[in-house]
Amino acid sequence: MLNKVLEFINREGNFSSRVIAREFNLQESMVDDFKNKLINMGYIAKISCDMSACEKCSCGCSTKKLNDKVDWEITKKGYELLNKIGR
Image 1 (cartoon, rainbow, N blue to C red):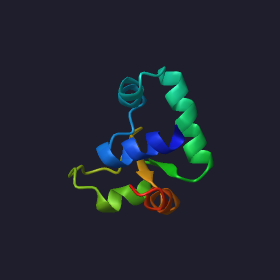
Image 2 (image 1 turned 90 degrees about the vertical axis):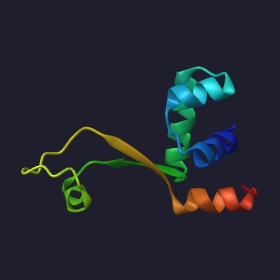
Image 3 (image 1 turned 30 degrees about the vertical axis):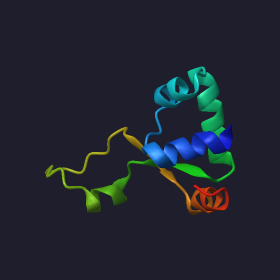
Image 4 (image 1 turned 180 degrees about the vertical axis):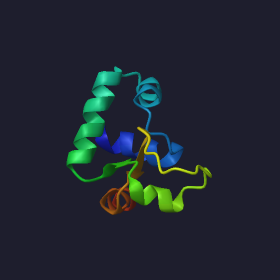
């Protein structure tokens, strides 16, 4: 099931637990557990807002204010697994 979740994330570009739970008819808490396992195995990673993000930011703000937004990415290891399973 972890592979299917990773494939879905790659295909849809959506890391939302709610969306993934709906896709696979699972509880969101179960999807959160799967995501935590994928994190621990090094297949996906959270990217938090930090000062380095301000260098690439195009919002045009005059102050550097960090927000609580969390982005996600599939790691190199995650893409290697997807390539290995043919996705």
